[in-house]
Amino acid sequence: MDLAIGARKVFVMMTLFAKDGAPKLVRECGYPLTGLGCVDRVYTDLATFRVGPEGATVLETFGITHADLSARLDVPLVPAHEAGTPPSGQSRA
Image (cartoon, rainbow, N blue to C red):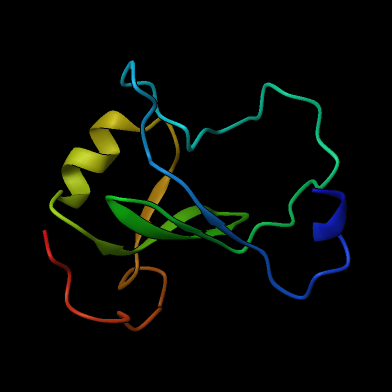
């Protein structure tokens, strides 16, 4: 992540859950950080998130509802319409 510090925008692409079902999008990182607060968007197999101080804004979902995401993740999730963000497309949930 050292390269991310000077970047204008940083996008992360990953699966949302590990093989054991543990969420990868977490409230606090358990590893040493070199790029604190540098991620703008997270693209996963189940949803797209915008990351900010208020938490993760759910921009789009794919085959899962916002309620199911909230139940499985320990991160404050904000629906795009509540964050004042126009949806980027139709939610496929």
